[in-house]
Image (cartoon, rainbow, N blue to C red):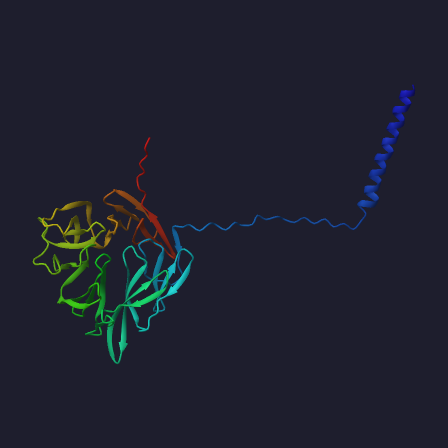
Length: 354
């Protein structure tokens, strides 16, 4: 009986305490001026990491040209040559003492330097002036000979224009092709000491290249190809019309057989050899000469604009790309999709050793 009374007493005490707590919460705590506001928590957008194979360029930029490693982008803006460093998005502007008009520019192979041709007016006369420009330092350098005379090409006619510039890094041989109003060309050569000479005048000259370890240009002359300072033409067995396509680091020079204005087969050889040993690359169908790109590394690309892809002939690998093809570079090809430049790498086969 005593235990029952004890249990009832503790139960009554517990009920009193519980009711006291409920009464305090209702009359005191909830009666105060406490405002409870709910705030919507939104997840902040995390910025996307920059794709190392994409380069953004500004609106309104026309033609672009990239260095061999794909790092630097050269372009004209408001008639000024500028170079974008894709590593940090910084820009450098080409400036020279001559303050001429930039009419041509071209990257040196496997270097971050550009050969720039300016059209300069001085004392009522016009001349073309080649200048080198280093992209990483933003420094321009006038080309001078051993007597410190600046290299200049006098403009014979106001309609003369720079058609092409080719350069051999190994022999420091510079060729400048000037196209005349009549469609023919003059060809100028500057040696390692920047001594300039006109080596062809008013000739029907097509594409020109300089083999890696040679100082003599290889050029199209009408329907044939020839080597400067050599007699006769380059003879490819059973080929009637020969076009010069390019050269590579191994001294190979590439030629195309042209039939009905299309390239039907590619031949290449080392011209330094006494007896030419021709090798061939087969095309699945005839293509335009402009759709063949010979890269300095020895890769040969054929562009299929409709498919948006290029085929590398030696490895038989295909690279799909977006937009329009711009050029080849050390790891593949570069395309442009509006204001975006895209590096499309060619994937090499990996050899595993067990």
